[in-house]
Image (cartoon, rainbow, N blue to C red; front, side):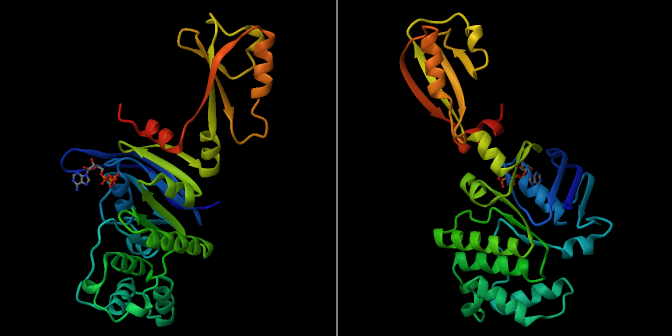
Length: 307
Ligand SMILES: Nc1ncnc2c1ncn2[C@@H]1O[C@H](COP(=O)(O)OP(=O)(O)OP(=O)(O)O)[C@@H](O)[C@H]1O
């Protein structure tokens, strides 16, 4: 599938000398929901800000729908909607005026029917006459989204969309993101909530210390993460795994006192029954057994650990 965003060899070092992005290569596919995960300070906002033309890149190249973000700035920017992390709004304007103005900024002809539908979708229609500074935080966030979508972008960036929002708004946002995807909008979101990525994303990218360390289909990642371990505490320690059992995914730990068997929870057959039968055949007895499962959270933490 054609990439909607192509990022090549992108670097950024801030004036402070801090290298925020180191040679990022990344392609975003048209129509996907891409979740960018990473710990604080990993470079997520910097990356998004460069693609959106808010921060200047150091080196490298970024194309949005084939348009270079520097040479062809206007064309690139018009395809993008951004819901930033921080809330900022023109406080004294009405919701309606703000959203209409926002659309005009991109040189789009007025389309009140589109904007009405947008506000209805975001449960903002009843509030269209309200001044933004009179709205609740959740409503202000909805206005930010309406602004970002006012010019009908084909790519929507959501930077920490659900940080600090209540459950209802979070659900609404997830529903809205799905609707947008159905209409062919590509969505890139950053989040600290693993469940959010799990729930929403088609692909997941992990950024750590300014480098992309993993990009993977969510389903595949979940399968990989769906691994479990069976730990057998042995009656008598083993010096090594018997050659006859070399085909099993076994590992000896604790000086040969325990055997670890890794299995795939997605498979119909875990292979445990067969393993236990084979161990008995080789007179390998165990006094105790336990299972251990690595959570998505754990795997994520191990991926981004700063050591
Ligand atoms: N304007 C700036 N000047 C200097 N350094 C900056 C600036 N903006 C960000 N940084 C630094 O660049 C690094 C990446 O920051 P960035 O905001 O992109 O991270 P992030 O992954 O979005 O973090 P968070 O999850 O906390 O939002 C951080 O170390 C940050 O301190």
